[in-house]
Image (tube, rainbow, N blue to C red; front, side, top):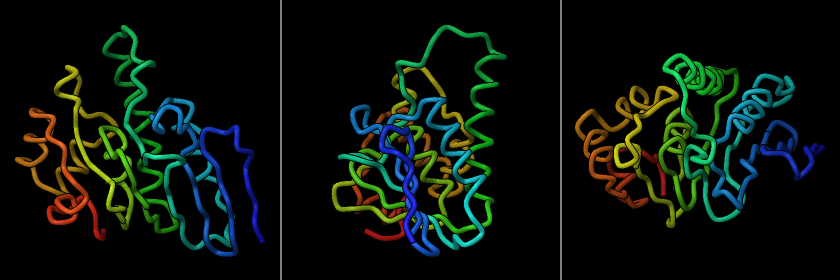
Length: 184
């Protein structure tokens, strides 16, 4: 049996027996993470039917996720910044420590917050065209959503520092070698 949320949603859900396919659905924005998308993602993971035993997370269009939707960045107080980061953290925590394993199928950009999201997932599969980057340092911002901890656990402090400070892009093959992807 298949169930689908309408395509105008920021995140779509399709259920086929025990498998839920969850798709970031902002291809015109390279599936950039807005607070609305994060809210929908958290809601979907919080309400998966008991019949679901595994989830697959992917992105619509050419990219898995290009990170934070920079159009949402506005002047804010430290408290507002922390509050927004906590929304991401809670959504990512729910995914990582939820009741079902989550498999990422990553293609195109897996960048910034998109890499943070991918780091919460249990199995990460990169298509040949996937590439990874942490451009936050070049934009004067820091990893939020607990990415500095999760990504560091995957690839180590020095690699995260290198990627953040230089903006270096890592290919799917290199990402597999260093631990960003389990399979290519």
